[in-house]
Image 1 (cartoon, one colour):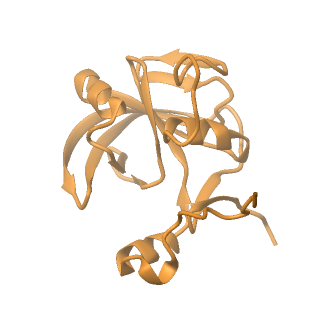
Image 2 (tube, rainbow, N blue to C red; image 1 turned 30 degrees about the vertical axis):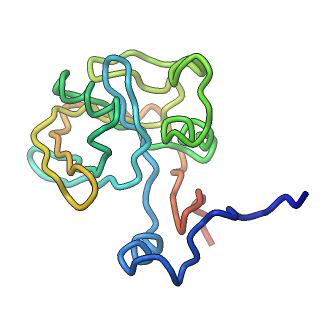
Length: 169
């Protein structure tokens, strides 16, 4: 038996669409979007727009439990994840088992916007403002109503299909 260091089922680069190849070359923040229910989803297509009011936009799976809960509640929380959160990101992305449910492990802090990891270095409480189909996803737009920054933490980044960390050099 051979243990591969890469995904043996991954589509070779030359067979991927040009759009998918371009997206893979853009580093993206790994965030956790959560809503009361509780429900959550790992989202790496996240953009924050400064303004009055500030906004957060993201591409999410419209068939996800997160979207059902967020649409019902009209609000949700967005938490930037850290390098220590790789397993958490995989669980909420559906890539790793979550015995007992997604929120069964780790410590969580309940907020008016949904549960937030207790160790989060930052999070934002968002009010849903709209959504529309965008490619194969749902573009969700929300107003940032609250932001909290309890600790400075490094970001977890997604790049070329893998997690990465930023380093100063």
